[in-house]
Length: 337
Image (cartoon, rainbow, N blue to C red; front, top):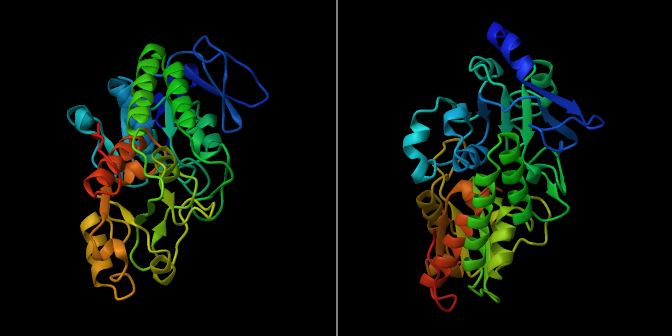
């Protein structure tokens, strides 16, 4: 593996990540326990690579765009307010980048939302980055109450807004923008509270992320679980703790939800990525076209990013709340932010 010389001479003195049994200050504050490791920095990181869209959008929301030297693994366009800023940041890959392309940016810190990008089988393990003096941070939602497996994992405890707020607060601490972190958390908390005024009790739903042949449907406890809990929806597949189990269409048709929430993705790695492609499939498949939601065209489209644990999940709550009102399934409407 080719390692840039500047990386070894500069990064090693900027950032260090210690094992969980060590305790060193994080930018002058208490150490951060992060997915079994303590993140420790000797100086505020200035060259960040973000390996997932969710992590990137938090960094942009914290005003750190000028420190991001590379991004990767996108499902959708960036939040509109960051489109100009993001266009100036190198995209290392639409999906997973190589380790070499990450190191070529000479990072002193790497952030990620998922273990399949920052872990075994991904870009590299955290340990590999640490050996090069590059600090790392993993979203708490990826390891708190979640058991990794060959797929997307099983959640023993649900994803909550507090996990999201913790990620924002800890990244703000690492990059020394604590005030921005507090403001962002307050804004997101207010938006969730406002959207949660909608009461969808008694309304059933399912969440289809992608894949026509063997569809990924949301289980009980990931980001769609937060959407359902906030609005009072009943997810017809809340009897599985798998985050995104693949379920055959016969079972889907039997559950026959009142509304279908569709992932409207712009990436190109599975079949039926866009909402339009999903609707076309549902309306043409003899097993699904007789479902009540399909016959009545009760669809709500949200981005793939909103279906992943991230700050975009808050937008997902708002979008689903608005959609339920427009479909006449709840009294009143709320406006997506």
